[in-house]
Picture 1: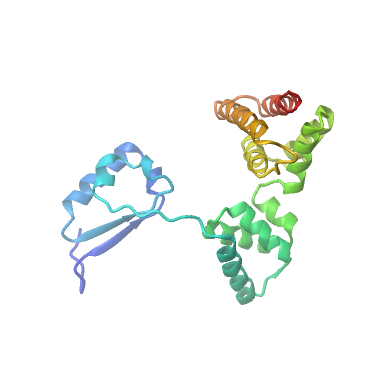
Picture 2: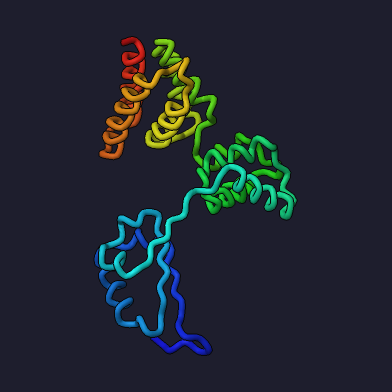
Length: 228
Protein backbone atom coordinates (compact mmCIF):
# COMPACT_ATOMS: atom_id res chain seq x y z
CA UNK A 1 0.00 0.00 0.00
CA UNK A 2 1.48 3.33 -1.09
CA UNK A 3 2.40 6.15 1.27
CA UNK A 4 -0.18 9.00 1.26
CA UNK A 5 0.86 12.26 -0.42
CA UNK A 6 0.43 15.47 1.54
CA UNK A 7 -1.22 13.73 4.50
CA UNK A 8 -0.27 11.66 7.52
CA UNK A 9 -2.40 8.71 6.48
CA UNK A 10 -4.99 7.42 4.02
CA UNK A 11 -8.59 6.76 4.96
CA UNK A 12 -10.37 3.62 3.74
CA UNK A 13 -14.14 3.47 4.28
CA UNK A 14 -15.76 0.02 4.11
CA UNK A 15 -19.54 0.09 3.84
CA UNK A 16 -21.63 -2.88 5.07
CA UNK A 17 -18.56 -4.42 6.68
CA UNK A 18 -20.72 -6.85 8.64
CA UNK A 19 -21.57 -8.59 5.36
CA UNK A 20 -17.98 -9.83 5.03
CA UNK A 21 -17.41 -13.52 5.68
CA UNK A 22 -15.36 -14.55 8.72
CA UNK A 23 -12.42 -15.46 6.46
CA UNK A 24 -12.57 -12.06 4.77
CA UNK A 25 -12.68 -10.35 8.17
CA UNK A 26 -9.61 -12.30 9.29
CA UNK A 27 -7.78 -11.11 6.17
CA UNK A 28 -8.95 -7.54 6.85
CA UNK A 29 -7.68 -7.81 10.39
CA UNK A 30 -4.20 -8.69 9.17
CA UNK A 31 -4.30 -5.84 6.67
CA UNK A 32 -5.30 -3.39 9.41
CA UNK A 33 -2.40 -4.57 11.56
CA UNK A 34 0.12 -4.34 8.72
CA UNK A 35 -0.69 -0.80 7.62
CA UNK A 36 -1.44 0.93 10.91
CA UNK A 37 1.25 3.53 10.16
CA UNK A 38 -0.22 4.79 6.89
CA UNK A 39 -3.93 3.90 6.87
CA UNK A 40 -7.02 4.48 9.02
CA UNK A 41 -9.99 2.18 8.47
CA UNK A 42 -13.61 3.22 8.95
CA UNK A 43 -16.04 0.29 9.01
CA UNK A 44 -19.76 0.87 8.59
CA UNK A 45 -21.98 -1.98 9.86
CA UNK A 46 -25.66 -2.47 10.57
CA UNK A 47 -24.80 -5.05 13.24
CA UNK A 48 -21.49 -4.60 15.03
CA UNK A 49 -21.95 -8.02 16.66
CA UNK A 50 -21.33 -9.62 13.25
CA UNK A 51 -17.78 -8.25 13.22
CA UNK A 52 -15.18 -10.59 14.71
CA UNK A 53 -13.79 -9.65 18.13
CA UNK A 54 -10.22 -8.88 16.89
CA UNK A 55 -11.60 -6.21 14.55
CA UNK A 56 -13.92 -4.76 17.19
CA UNK A 57 -11.06 -4.51 19.67
CA UNK A 58 -9.02 -2.49 17.17
CA UNK A 59 -11.78 0.05 16.55
CA UNK A 60 -13.54 2.79 18.45
CA UNK A 61 -17.26 1.98 18.34
CA UNK A 62 -19.74 4.74 17.48
CA UNK A 63 -23.45 3.93 17.43
CA UNK A 64 -25.96 6.14 15.63
CA UNK A 65 -29.64 6.09 16.57
CA UNK A 66 -32.39 6.35 13.93
CA UNK A 67 -33.44 9.87 12.95
CA UNK A 68 -36.63 11.27 14.41
CA UNK A 69 -39.78 11.87 12.36
CA UNK A 70 -39.15 15.64 12.37
CA UNK A 71 -35.58 15.20 11.11
CA UNK A 72 -36.58 12.84 8.30
CA UNK A 73 -39.52 15.05 7.33
CA UNK A 74 -37.37 18.19 7.28
CA UNK A 75 -34.68 16.62 5.09
CA UNK A 76 -37.26 15.02 2.79
CA UNK A 77 -38.97 18.38 2.32
CA UNK A 78 -35.61 19.97 1.46
CA UNK A 79 -35.00 17.34 -1.22
CA UNK A 80 -38.54 17.66 -2.56
CA UNK A 81 -38.15 21.43 -2.87
CA UNK A 82 -34.73 21.29 -4.55
CA UNK A 83 -35.72 18.53 -6.98
CA UNK A 84 -39.17 20.06 -7.63
CA UNK A 85 -40.98 16.84 -6.71
CA UNK A 86 -44.77 16.93 -6.57
CA UNK A 87 -45.69 14.92 -3.50
CA UNK A 88 -48.67 14.52 -1.17
CA UNK A 89 -48.09 15.56 2.44
CA UNK A 90 -49.22 12.18 3.75
CA UNK A 91 -46.73 10.49 1.38
CA UNK A 92 -43.92 12.12 3.37
CA UNK A 93 -45.35 10.55 6.53
CA UNK A 94 -45.45 7.23 4.68
CA UNK A 95 -41.77 7.60 3.79
CA UNK A 96 -40.89 7.89 7.47
CA UNK A 97 -43.07 4.90 8.35
CA UNK A 98 -41.26 2.63 5.90
CA UNK A 99 -37.71 3.97 6.38
CA UNK A 100 -37.82 3.77 10.22
CA UNK A 101 -35.39 6.63 10.72
CA UNK A 102 -32.89 5.60 8.00
CA UNK A 103 -32.40 8.67 5.78
CA UNK A 104 -30.59 6.72 3.06
CA UNK A 105 -33.56 4.39 2.76
CA UNK A 106 -35.95 7.36 2.73
CA UNK A 107 -34.06 8.98 -0.16
CA UNK A 108 -34.00 5.69 -2.10
CA UNK A 109 -37.78 5.28 -1.71
CA UNK A 110 -38.41 8.88 -2.71
CA UNK A 111 -36.20 8.52 -5.79
CA UNK A 112 -37.85 5.23 -6.74
CA UNK A 113 -41.33 6.71 -6.33
CA UNK A 114 -40.50 9.79 -8.41
CA UNK A 115 -39.06 7.63 -11.20
CA UNK A 116 -42.40 5.80 -11.28
CA UNK A 117 -44.67 8.85 -11.32
CA UNK A 118 -44.36 12.63 -11.49
CA UNK A 119 -46.82 12.84 -8.59
CA UNK A 120 -45.72 10.85 -5.53
CA UNK A 121 -48.57 9.42 -3.46
CA UNK A 122 -48.85 7.23 -0.37
CA UNK A 123 -49.83 4.25 -2.50
CA UNK A 124 -46.67 4.57 -4.60
CA UNK A 125 -44.44 4.82 -1.53
CA UNK A 126 -45.87 1.64 0.00
CA UNK A 127 -45.64 -0.13 -3.36
CA UNK A 128 -42.00 0.88 -3.91
CA UNK A 129 -41.02 -0.15 -0.36
CA UNK A 130 -42.85 -3.49 -0.65
CA UNK A 131 -44.98 -2.56 2.37
CA UNK A 132 -48.68 -2.86 3.06
CA UNK A 133 -50.69 0.25 3.74
CA UNK A 134 -51.27 0.54 7.50
CA UNK A 135 -55.07 0.44 7.12
CA UNK A 136 -54.86 -2.97 5.41
CA UNK A 137 -52.90 -4.50 8.29
CA UNK A 138 -55.17 -2.83 10.86
CA UNK A 139 -58.25 -4.21 9.09
CA UNK A 140 -56.71 -7.69 9.24
CA UNK A 141 -56.00 -7.43 12.98
CA UNK A 142 -59.44 -5.91 13.69
CA UNK A 143 -61.08 -8.86 11.93
CA UNK A 144 -59.10 -11.24 14.17
CA UNK A 145 -60.10 -9.33 17.31
CA UNK A 146 -63.73 -9.55 16.18
CA UNK A 147 -63.32 -13.31 15.86
CA UNK A 148 -63.96 -13.26 12.10
CA UNK A 149 -61.39 -15.63 10.64
CA UNK A 150 -62.81 -15.61 7.09
CA UNK A 151 -62.61 -11.80 6.80
CA UNK A 152 -59.09 -11.81 8.26
CA UNK A 153 -58.12 -14.48 5.73
CA UNK A 154 -59.46 -12.32 2.87
CA UNK A 155 -57.34 -9.37 4.02
CA UNK A 156 -54.34 -11.69 4.22
CA UNK A 157 -54.91 -12.89 0.66
CA UNK A 158 -54.96 -9.28 -0.55
CA UNK A 159 -51.56 -8.68 1.08
CA UNK A 160 -50.07 -11.93 -0.22
CA UNK A 161 -51.47 -12.10 -3.74
CA UNK A 162 -52.75 -8.67 -4.78
CA UNK A 163 -49.89 -6.69 -3.22
CA UNK A 164 -47.28 -9.44 -3.53
CA UNK A 165 -45.83 -9.11 -0.03
CA UNK A 166 -43.72 -11.87 1.48
CA UNK A 167 -44.69 -13.64 4.68
CA UNK A 168 -41.83 -12.00 6.59
CA UNK A 169 -42.89 -8.52 5.38
CA UNK A 170 -46.46 -9.11 6.53
CA UNK A 171 -45.57 -10.56 9.92
CA UNK A 172 -43.17 -7.67 10.57
CA UNK A 173 -45.96 -5.16 9.93
CA UNK A 174 -48.45 -7.10 12.06
CA UNK A 175 -45.92 -6.94 14.90
CA UNK A 176 -45.52 -3.16 14.55
CA UNK A 177 -49.27 -2.57 14.57
CA UNK A 178 -49.90 -4.90 17.54
CA UNK A 179 -47.30 -3.02 19.58
CA UNK A 180 -49.08 0.29 18.93
CA UNK A 181 -52.66 -0.90 19.47
CA UNK A 182 -54.59 1.12 22.03
CA UNK A 183 -55.34 -0.46 25.41
CA UNK A 184 -59.10 -0.28 24.87
CA UNK A 185 -58.80 -2.60 21.86
CA UNK A 186 -55.97 -4.85 23.07
CA UNK A 187 -54.72 -5.07 26.64
CA UNK A 188 -51.09 -5.68 27.54
CA UNK A 189 -51.57 -9.37 28.40
CA UNK A 190 -53.14 -10.03 25.01
CA UNK A 191 -50.30 -8.17 23.29
CA UNK A 192 -47.69 -10.27 25.10
CA UNK A 193 -49.35 -13.54 24.07
CA UNK A 194 -49.75 -12.41 20.45
CA UNK A 195 -46.14 -11.22 20.21
CA UNK A 196 -45.01 -14.59 21.55
CA UNK A 197 -46.94 -16.30 18.72
CA UNK A 198 -45.58 -13.81 16.16
CA UNK A 199 -42.03 -14.73 17.20
CA UNK A 200 -42.81 -18.43 16.83
CA UNK A 201 -44.36 -18.01 13.36
CA UNK A 202 -41.54 -15.73 12.25
CA UNK A 203 -39.00 -18.41 13.19
CA UNK A 204 -40.91 -20.97 11.13
CA UNK A 205 -40.96 -18.63 8.12
CA UNK A 206 -37.21 -18.04 8.38
CA UNK A 207 -36.73 -21.81 8.47
CA UNK A 208 -38.61 -22.13 5.16
CA UNK A 209 -42.18 -22.99 6.18
CA UNK A 210 -45.12 -22.16 3.87
CA UNK A 211 -46.02 -18.45 4.13
CA UNK A 212 -49.77 -18.79 3.72
CA UNK A 213 -50.23 -21.70 6.11
CA UNK A 214 -48.14 -20.10 8.84
CA UNK A 215 -49.81 -16.70 8.55
CA UNK A 216 -53.26 -18.25 8.62
CA UNK A 217 -52.17 -20.15 11.73
CA UNK A 218 -51.14 -16.81 13.25
CA UNK A 219 -54.57 -15.32 12.51
CA UNK A 220 -56.20 -18.31 14.19
CA UNK A 221 -53.93 -17.93 17.21
CA UNK A 222 -54.77 -14.20 17.56
CA UNK A 223 -58.48 -15.04 17.51
CA UNK A 224 -58.08 -17.77 20.15
CA UNK A 225 -55.90 -15.58 22.38
CA UNK A 226 -58.41 -12.73 22.24
CA UNK A 227 -61.25 -15.06 23.20
CA UNK A 228 -59.53 -16.36 26.35
